[in-house]
Each structure stands twice: as C-alpha cells, then as structure tokens.
Length: 325
Image (cartoon, rainbow, N blue to C red):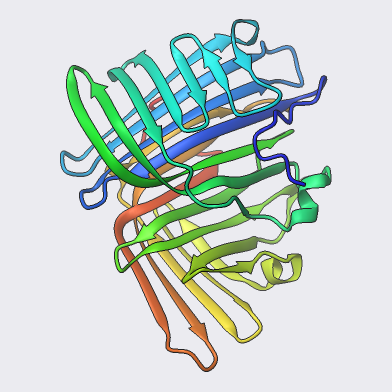
C-alpha cells in the first residue's frame, strides 16, 4: 500500500517533502501553482517549512512568484494525513488558504477542490518502497477542479472549477537534472491526463544516461511507460523552453512535444538537502501535443494550447533570466 499523504520524512538526515496544487483556467492562459514544503538539510542549515506560489497570467504577460520560509518548529506537518500549517498558510485535503508577501507584492488565496480521480503512481509501484531513486513523486489526486479566489496586489481573481491536480513528492535529494511535464485535460480531450519526465542522476563525477518515463490516462485506461528498460530506450531532448519525448510499450507509441516562452517561466531556488541549491525553471502555461499510436486503432493527437505544466531543474540560469525567489 503506497502512503499517499503520510509524511515520509526520516528522523535524521537530509530530506524534502512537498505537496502542491496546480490548476489552469479552462480557456484563458492563466494558471496557479501553490506548494507547501518541509525541508531538512543534511548539514547545519536550519530546518524549514516553505510556502511557494506562482501566478501565471499569459493575458498580461506576467509571471509572479512568491515564497516565505518558516522555522520548522513553528510549523505543523501531519504524520497521518495531508495537513500543513505554516504561518497564515494552511493545507488539508480539498482546501488551502494562504498569504505570501515578497518583491512581487502580495498574494493571498482561499481555494477548495473536489476529490478528483484515483492516485496516479508515476514510478513503478515497487520503487516507492526502495531507497532509490532518491526523489519520488506521485499524483495524489489527478483531475481536481479548483474553485475560490486569489487576490494579487489588491486585484481579485475568481476561480470556477479550474482543472488541475494535487501532487506529492519527497526525497533525500533532488534529481540532479530533469524536465517534468503534466497536462490535466487537453483541449480536445478534457478527461485525459498526462505526466512525463526526463531525468539524469549523478554517479560520482559523471551523469547517468537520460531516463524518460510517461503515464497517460485516456478513455478510462491508464497507459504506463515507466519500466527501467523503456526509460533507457526512450528518446528525449530538452532545453529552455522546448522538450520532445518519444517512448513506447509493445505496439504502442507515445510522442510528446512541449514548449513555453520565457515570460511564462519563474526561476526558483530549490534548496538541496545534501547541500547547495538547484534552479527550477517553472512554467504552468506550456503548449503540449501528445500523439498516441496503437496497432489496430486510429491515431490520437491530443493538444493543449497553454494548459501544460513544464519544469526544468538545472544548475544554471538561462541567459537573460533572473531568480524570482
């Protein structure tokens, strides 16, 4: 049984653990991402609770990122369910409230969402019980519908059943390099759900080959492309801010392309438990096309104009970009 909500933090050693909720406007290029994180370093850095938010508004070509840190002893992270309290920020199943201030002003939210669908295990199930990989993730509630209000610098935005997801990830260190993507409903297939990743881990001074995995829920069926052998055979290329991934499983092929623009990306600092920092290039307004080919069935081409989440974890900022938080 996979523990979908229970805190995975060990009593000692470096660890991070995050729950995040994301959603996109059903039609406009607008999106919200809110993340509640426990961080415990392996070294002498203080243990923290972190709360993040990124508001992306492609209509106005604005992306605003916020983050506040709280001493961990002043936070509450439940060990039995998804429940977080950090300052004026709260998260529990189906509801989240918060208030953050920073160089981009002030953002507050009072949001709620439905149960969504059954959890989607992105990795093979046995991997969740192993020490490796050191970073793990799952979609605890795919296809939620987020409603409520956001207030950005005095302006109110009302959310009415925005499609999205609730997610949970944790580990003893961040994956060294990755591209990650997700679509909670395509324009021509609202009930479809896609998650994909291309990653590399460092072994000594060298990086592993790229490993790419994907999961697609379509027409009531879950298609998994996540075995180790398939991950190694997949073909993927990414850079700021484009990504292509081709993978397969028997007679089934899945081709994914994803792209966004620099003004739809927030550059964020992620503390790494073993030491140092990583840079997350975080966009929630990516265009995505996914083509599914299966022997004996018509080809399906799924597209989303701006409903894709697209992140790149790296050690370097692209030229011309600055860290927002």
